[in-house]
Amino acid sequence: MQLNKKDVLEQLNKACKNTLMETLNIEMIDFGDDFLIAKMPVNSRVHQPDGVLHGGATVALAESVGSFASHIFNDPEKFFVRGIEISANHLKSIREGYIFANATFLHKGRTTQLLDIRITDEADNLISICKLTTIALPKK
Image 1 (cartoon, helix red, strand yellow):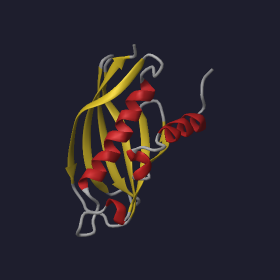
Image 2 (cartoon, rainbow, N blue to C red):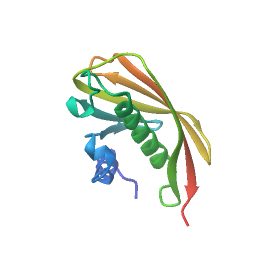
Image 3 (cartoon, rainbow, N blue to C red):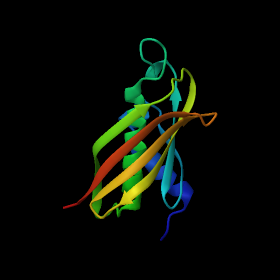
């Protein structure tokens, strides 16, 4: 039985319970055939000492959405996914509001996947560009 979008997003967000994603208030909000989008609030919980978004929080958002994208586009009954490399270029600072991470595939291999993750603010300004490599490993 095919799950609808609402059910898939609900399951993904439920999986975030008691994890770093819950701590950072990361929420999966949309997906399609080749993308997954998540959002995260920018507030003092994710700031550097000088009051702007911490790059590590941005990377945590990027790896979370990218790993979930690889998870849902592989067979989750047969494989588990792990991030094996991530890079980030931070282009703009932000102090408050929401940021959105849009993960799209550059490569969808059977074993490894490469994702492009664009982090934008509510006005669609580009905040960071991340690349994530994941690996799909068989469940035993």
